[in-house]
Image (cartoon, rainbow, N blue to C red; front, side):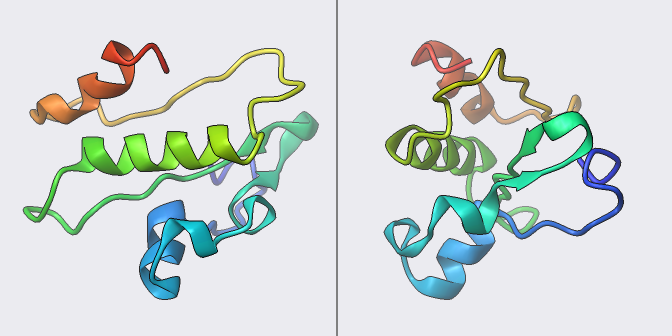
Length: 99
């Protein structure tokens, strides 16, 4: 994501939700940045290692994006997730037809 955003750091959905107290207190423009060739980027974020389920964080972020119209007028959506994750929570978006 940092390459797409020309090395700019990005605040994640879950990080901002934790700071604000709820995901409902976030605006889409705060977490969606436009990078190289107008690719829109969002970082879902996740819990600290060993605490919580990262899959649930992804579901929270995807639901937030859906509710705020992030998927309108896009040609395709690409998800970049860790390849070594052992948590079954990453399969949740697939089971719900979101990926």
